[in-house]
Image (cartoon, rainbow, N blue to C red; front, side, top):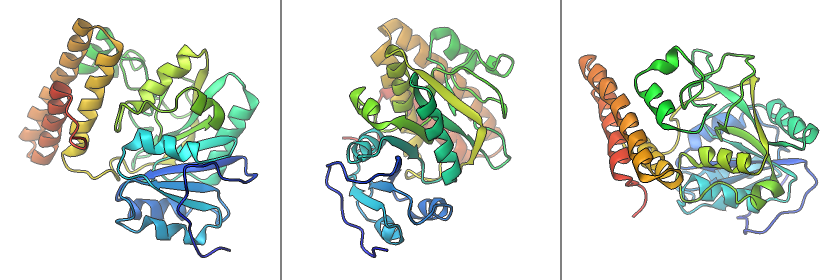
Length: 310
């Protein structure tokens, strides 16, 4: 077994494995250690490190004979994920979050789905929270004025398929218009031919945009609600107020990119309105940090300003 990990150039690597796992990290060593605990040492994977080696994630790959490391240079998730896919020669790619806990059996099931259905453009496992429930936002539907306001006023709790973000039940067969990239499998060549993740979005909403791309190409998407992957939400990416602001900024950019000005403003107003009662509840419960995060999200929605980009 090799004891060195060479920095990969942006050229396809050779190999006969049917799929390669792409992991984008940013100060995520502890989370990545947990993921790798469940992975065989012959697993083919590439880590695109947006922290440029600052926290030593490169060292974690030394015991993996097919592990590769690429310096992501803090280009954001979408560009880093695309970089990992372009550098691979595998037939299939599985994108995984470092704070998720999939198994190789889950990854192989996703690949088997793609191999069995040429019309399937992507397939994802369902991430679950610490309570064992499928998380909100494992996928969802294209934002519209009605869906955005349904989310804002909480009516999605009564009509679970009427909002923007899905939270399906275990084993539920549900039709979605986009899937999260936390544990997502695609055909490598098809993914690249379609442009990959939209690099206009530093992080967040690149999954929503890719869902739109697949629909435009006449391809389907599938969420496997029988494949459950534990996930520590917010366990990577820097934390604090930057990520909530970035989430808001990316949503604002997406709405503007794909809607006329009036509709985009109406949807942005809906997402802002939905946060205001959350801020009030958080303050009443003494959760000032949560309240500040909600305020940061609103700042992102209103200004479109990324805290990571200058």
